Image (cartoon, rainbow, N blue to C red):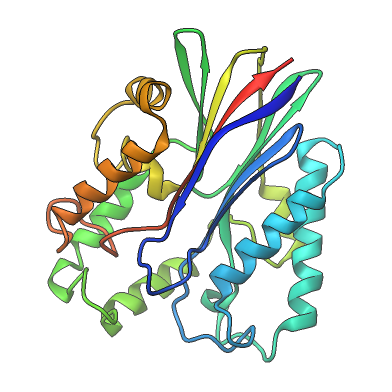
Length: 273
């Protein structure tokens, strides 16, 4: 079996700043990566922000990975990121919040089925006939929305971000138990793994949380309806619907969040024989 690419899409949340998402696919490996938004000025890695840097480097690492179980691939990606960071960082980080990090989900076709690994809030849907199954982390937007709602009086959509919001985000970035793709090799031990059945004709949608907001934070549809919409019209109309929801709530009052629009990426694949 192999992956056939049907469509992919990646939208910057703000076209004035880099898109910190990356997607990629090979014959039997596919991935989505969401670099964690920078909470300080560039400088640790030169003129490029840490979010764009780690997304680019991690995507290159997955693209160069050989055929191996997902955990072995992830350990190799972590190790490569650590080496690259040590070779290009210009100074010590101000604190742990400045270390580049990302959410990711990787899928691999093997003789056992579809093997997946993830950290953070990227997710996947797989359709087998009429059945749609969510793979990866459950939706956790309620926690983030509650945290954002608590800071609503500080100007959630304001640019540049108020210092109070930046301080809150930095504190959250340093919380114990935050497991993400990063530059510390030991983090690979925390990768979540799953193996699910796979057959020719099954379809897979890998998403960063910015795209999954359609079914999570905004509840515009459920998982089955999203996959039906993908099959009927493709990814572009869904991206337009996502941005329309956000434009209608530009002050982040109806759906409390830390920016009007997040980077949003999706990869639509079909399993071929």
